[in-house]
Length: 239
Image 1 (cartoon, one colour):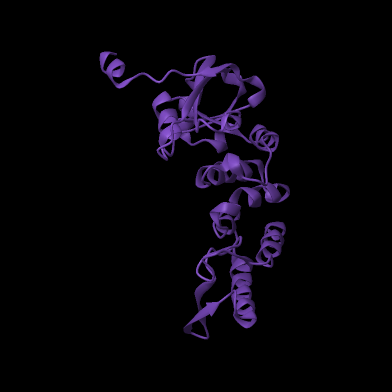
Image 2: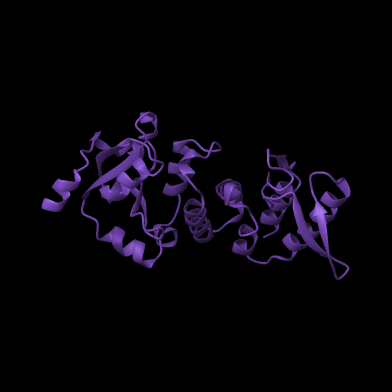
């Protein structure tokens, strides 16, 4: 825990990044707002973290106390803002058991919106992380059962915006072509669905907690990549 706490404290003292909505919205591992309330000497006090150095120091002192009082990796991890969760897990590896690492990696991936777009990671880095994880800790009981029941060769699907074909070769695919179509068109885009096949042994994880039938793949082993013809509404009714 001491190593994890030192890591957390180093992240705490990173500069708060302003946004065009500051001081209300900021970017930082431990806060997404530049105005926050903190109990000081039994009273609630509002702090402005971007405009007052004194308030910033007061907030950091309070957060330091909270960090030092944590006694479990998960307790510390859940103090981290979602956009920084994967980076925290990456840097925390030396201080985590394989079980804790695998469980936190799973949660961070699922919590993060579009984790494949995280600029702190190359796809090869994510693949290495998943390969080093323990599948029984990475997936929950239902997901592990679904994974174990997969056939030796699996068809997977990925929906992308039509003007971003470079986004096809990413780790995250789905078993459900309808879900891939939803991703392709969710922002009213004229998207495209791709289909590929992969051997089960090269699937790194299956996550169903978000209802997406998500498959994490080792990109080097995708085969038969091609555009998937989305059935028309009329054809769907005939099937």
